[in-house]
Length: 369
Image 1 (cartoon, rainbow, N blue to C red):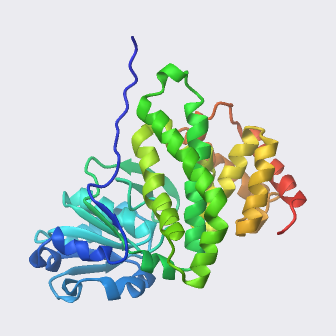
Image 2: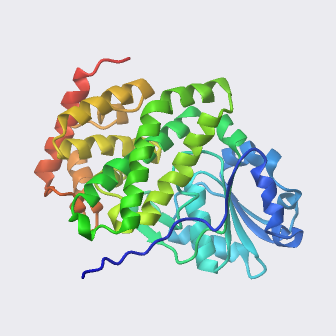
């Protein structure tokens, strides 16, 4: 009998998502703890969340830092020095960049971390890992931490007030869970796939069905400022569902080509302002083209048009005929450590470029809804 070993990291120790969830902070930390917390936040995130934050945030003894760059080692070292030995807990308020920075800082200082996402753009609040960048903004990998996030507090009213592109990015990033997990699991014999990985794959299929059926309506709910059960379900799907899939299935259900294509795009400066999930959305198209699934590609292109997601490199500010930029992007996408090499097909520079050309050509045939 053979056994397949995986490390199951299901998610945070505590997760709350309902109107008023941030009040739960006082059930886990004393006033003194919160007054000696290190608070990390984005500038816009703080404006969005401040009305929900406890009074302890404003006291002088609480450390505060506005995060304006991707998670990188020099920044984390500076933040650790600022937090100092009296710090009791790290609290992140914001999007994925703040979440990753808070988790990395908490791991560095061996402190618990509380995460208060102000957007539903990724599953960063759920997962015990941080994506690392160099100071130039280029992706250099990710690190999985041994400690779970202690407390995640999602206030749906804050998410409802966020700009629509963030929710759109979250929908795309979560949609990738199915496409990447399905090809990864497909690399193995059924007997080699652990039960929890198969469970995660079934969850990913359910997420895909939910997003394909409800995304257009939920984006309308956001536009109208309507807090509906359907809206909260999609927020849960993005933050909790997406993270849970990778945590349950480990290497069987994490990332494949779509995220590698995202990583490749980070070497192009014009993409640095584009949200993670938006770049991943394009990566999904390339991955489907690599699998030569023309029917699925056409379905996705139509869905993307409905949501106003980019369907080509041109829409991301990248010229496919610019040899220097495309070669740099492809080289980064195909680094030896990239998960694109877990695909069931061998991906060379030529094969990847051909898939990108396929997406560009297919996008021209899909009419705008």
